[in-house]
Length: 248
Image (cartoon, rainbow, N blue to C red; front, side):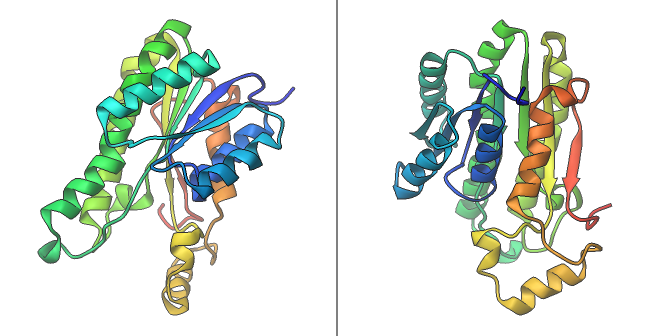
């Protein structure tokens, strides 16, 4: 029996990177996948085809996660199409890094809206479905910089720290209906974005990690799988750092 056999998950921002790795890992464990990204582009179509090859039901949806109205529309479509929503992975996120003295209001607002408001939007839209089912698992992607902060990332760190407070509060609010809510705080993960960093910067990051390497999206995905499935049936309101001991 696969760990997520017959269940349905929504994974936001899943056309690439960590979100895609999570969607693929869930699909390997028998989970039907509804995933979102801002545009229905070639990346979305390729991801959809890759997930479909694993023998599960899958559909990609163009969605502006920062829009309350658009999120409600998409979640309603998913609920009608798939019949249930058992897992929500709030992964959508962006960066607009810079020192506070040079940061614009637009840079602040964009990061807070996409990274933090999207968690509110999707969780609120999914809650009635999970509440009626009397079960569900919500996995929020935070970051180690949301736990410990980071220079030149005040907007990003604030958004990811906000996710931690949201997660703990939601866990206490939803527990009565057997809906669990947890967060993952990835450290330095090798993705397309971090892969574009100059080699000397990447090596400097890795030198400060006790395990002396960056993590992979698949390693984050395995943690998300644990939190999504019944192996973590009594785990809620927790934050798991996936960082090679970078943040202890």
